[in-house]
Amino acid sequence: MAATRVYVARLAGLAVLGPDGESIGRIRDVVVAVRSDRQQPRVHGLVVELPTRRRIFVPILRITAIEPGVVTLNTGTVSLRRFNQRPGEMLALAQIVDSVVRVEDPDLPDLADVDVHVVDLGIEQTRSRDWLVSRVAVRGHRRLGRRRTVHVVDWTMVSGLTPYEIGRPGQDVTQLLEQFEGMRAADVAQQLRELPEKRRIEVAVALDDERLADVVQELPDDEQVELLGHLEVRRAADVLEAMDPDDAADLLGELPEGEAESLLALMDPQESEPVRRLLAHSPYSAGGLMTPKPIILTPSTTVAEALARVRNPDLTPALASMVFVVRPPTATPTGRYLGSVHIQQLLREPPAHLVGGILDTDLSPLRPDLPLAAVTRYFATYNLVCGPVVDEENHLLGAVSVDDVLDHLLPEDWRDQEETDERGRA
Image: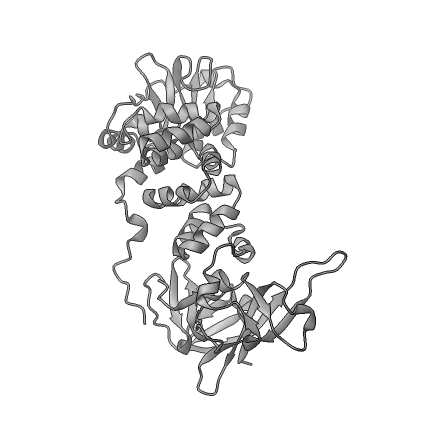
C-alpha cells in the first residue's frame, strides 16, 4: 500500500523504479523549500543517484507511490542533468537534519529552553497531491545514565529552522558522515562539491586527516586550494602530510610561494622532503608527475615478499602493476637502478626465487625532465600503466602512473562535463 506520510531518513537508499519496473537509481536526499515563517515547507522533489553515481533531480509530482523498499515514478523519462540546488531550496538530510533547534511544545515541558538536534523530518501528502513537511523528530543531549529520547513534534512547534538559522556555522554533520561511510574517496569528493559551501567546510573539518586527504586529492585544483584555506594552518599541514607526495606537490604548486613554504615548514621533514623534490620539477614533466613512493626492492627480495608488497591495499592498481629493483638505499633517490619486474612475471615465478634474477632490463626509464607529451607516448608505446623515473646518475627518483598522466591530459573541468544526451531539469 502506498504511503502518504513518511520520514525522509527512511527514504534514503530506497530504489526508484519507472512505471514498468525499470530501475532508475536510489534516493539520496529530499529537496524542500524552507520559509522564513513557520509555515510547513513544501517538498519539491528527490535527489536520486543513478548507477553512474550522478545525482539528478526528480520532481515530487513524478512519484506515483512510496512503498516499503521502493519508490515508483509515473514516467521512465527523467532529466539526466546533474542536480543543482536552487535558491530557496534546502536538502533535508544534508542541511536540515543535525540542526540545533528549540521545541515549544506544552506537552513536552522538559524540552523547554533546551537545545535539541533534528534527527528526521516527516513529510505528508495533502489532498492536492502536494507533499509538505509536517513533523520533526528531535533528540536531546544525553544525560548521565540515560539514553537520549527521540520526540516527534509538529513543525510549528519548532524554532530554529529558518534558512538563516540553518545557515549559521557550527551545525553537526553526523548524518552526512554516516552516508559517506564505505564510499570511495572520489564519490565523497563529488558529493562534497554538491553541498553548500558551509556544509562542505563543516564536513571537511569533521573528517579525520587520512580520509580528508584522500577526498581532497579527488577535487579540482581550485577547490582543493579553497578547502585547504578554510582549515586551520596546522590542520592544513597535517592533511598535506597525509596526501600522496605528488598530489601534495600539485596542491602546493597552486599556492603563493610564501604560503606554500609556510605549510612545508609545518610538515614533518620526512614528509615534506619528497614534496620539495617534486616541486623542483615542472608539473608537466615526468619529475613533476611521479610519485616518490612506488614499490622499491633490492635484488635479494624473494618473489613471495614482492607479492606481499604488491597486495598493499593502499596502492593504486597502476602502482601495484610493477616493482622496481635497486641497490641500497631503497628510499628515493635510491642506489643504482637495476630494472623492473611486472606483476605478471611475479605471479609466474616460484615464491622462493629472487627478483634480482627475473629483472626486465630492456625497458628504458623516463628522465625527470621528459615533457608530458613524451611521457604519454612512452606509455602508449610500451603498453604500460606505470614507469620508472631515473636521473642521469642512474638513481631511481620515483614512478609515473597512468592515472597521473590522465589527470594532466584531461581538461581542468572534466569532472563538470555533462554527457551529450542530457536534458534540462524538469
